[in-house]
Each structure stands twice: as C-alpha cells, then as structure tokens.
Image 1 (cartoon, one colour):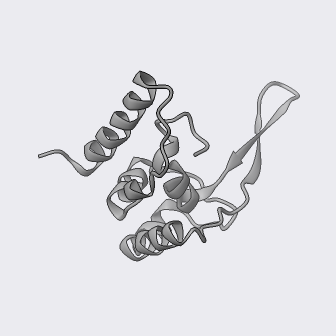
Image 2: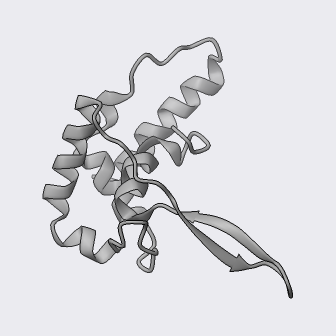
Length: 124
C-alpha cells in the first residue's frame, strides 16, 4: 500500500503527465483533488523547521490540531472563500553588503496553495 504522500504525488504526477502529453487539454476543475488527504500530504512535506508566516503560526502549532485545520481549509477551498494571507517579506543576506527579499507564507498557506502548486510550477 502506498503512503499518503506517495498517493498525493501520484495524483499530481498523473495530472502533470496529462498536461504534458496533451497541451490542448483544459482542466476545468481540480477541486476534487483538494481534500484532507492531499493537504495532509502537503503538510507532511513541509520542512520541520519551516518558518512561521505573517500570522506567526509555526508548522508545529498548525499541526497540533491538524485534522480540524485541514477540514476547515478544505471547506473554505470548496466554498471558494479561501483567501490566502499576505506573504511576510523577509530579507536574507545575499552578499557582503546586499540583502535579498524573499517571502514566507507560513504552513497554512503552504499547505493550501502547495496542494497543486508544487508539481505544476507553483502559483496554482
């Protein structure tokens, strides 16, 4: 039997393969994939030391009530009422005198947005 993460990756891989083989294929909805199983797999794929987002919620804190958080997230996604939080801008040292801006979205947004974005080049 496949692990939860392998199931998620298999589903996403099949969609990506279909998109590559048939560029004219139009996906009208991927909502059927947005379920607690998929989002749990995305959450489990986050780094253990993932930084908190703008809401200052860490992966550990989000995971304390993971099932309730995922259920609520799926409900918001299916109602189309999910509004991702702004990305917290963080500056990292890029060179001796340079700082480079990067974004940190936090575990809730990474789980929701990363549900399909990871295998489709992000941004879905």
